[in-house]
Length: 542
Image (tube, rainbow, N blue to C red; front, side, top):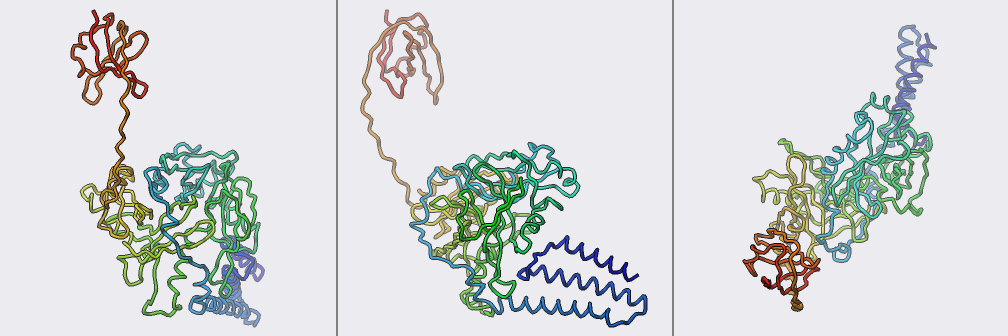
């Protein structure tokens, strides 16, 4: 009976290991929790055996003592690693530099497209190409859609994932066939089939699960979230940051390096933060990682105990993250991705006083590869206020605004947003003055919106008047070989083929042209404009 009890406890402990896959390191809080669960399983099992065999041997009291010791250890280490005793290591996990808006933001022009495709729209567009995937019923498109630069253009990329456990068993032999990318400029979504199938993923099970593969390759590493990138040849890689603690054993974790895992071959390579990074890498840190560090910095400015919230600020990402109304409106994302002046992918979020959610004291731009934080000390409108303004302008249409992205227009900061209908299609564009959100313009095209906003704020530049030199007048005569007629902007034009030359003549210069037929000999005057012979005078030549 004792042997059976020990076997059952061992099997349950193995199941706990399989589920938790903790790192072999005390820097991982998962390891002591796993040891606690194992000790608890054996304590319960041996107590059950003891009760049924009336054995009160002290030996069976030892597992409970070990269980209690591990639990006390977890509590103590969690406390000494927590912000309450380590506010400085948490707050100093990042350094925030002062940004220069004038020098570091490029003036937005009508040719810009990177800011015009929001995350939600990319998700909807990507879902529509799932039908092009082989055995599409086995897969879903992940909701990740990170902004990347690939072969000189900007895209949002998202991996395919197994739909469920049953689909995994159906598809595991063939793997995942590829990923989905959405062109930010053209808004075209397409499925990209990889040369070799993806055999390791975050949605995979058992031996195809990325967490298990990484644990087998790096038993002692503590990992952050994983996400997909592609190299210059379109090969998919999983990017996973490796964390170390700066407070106690488990607190104030920051990245010390990262692992790149080829999603098709499973080959992985560790890079330290200081090493030169692959040029194609556009993201090194997860969004939650970047925002968590910003929250530490601004929430712990005067330590953990700060009841009055003196000098405490919240990122827009944190204070309204996931908030949605009861009417079914989409969640308030609290961030957006953008492209900097030098072409790097960055994350934008506002900074709001802890006691006032109606205005921003400034905003943050965070580099997704270097992890560099820059703060722009420019007070202005809080993002949801700007969204409400533009939704109010067209409230009769019921369009919803996306979370804005920060841009520079006429030298000043402004919010750029999409307005979408209930089906998620972009119907309007909007620009709101960050410094004065009562100045807002909504248009049907981006060019119209930018032009209207510039006029609204008094920055509309007059187009220069171009004085053209008068064109030289030529004369000709000949027989009409062919004649055609067309309406252009309400005016009738005749097109004549005379001696193998094409001439264009408005009816306004001679209404008698309606009677001209092929075979008539005519005399005409014309000038050449944009490669076309434009007739200025025409008459029948007897």
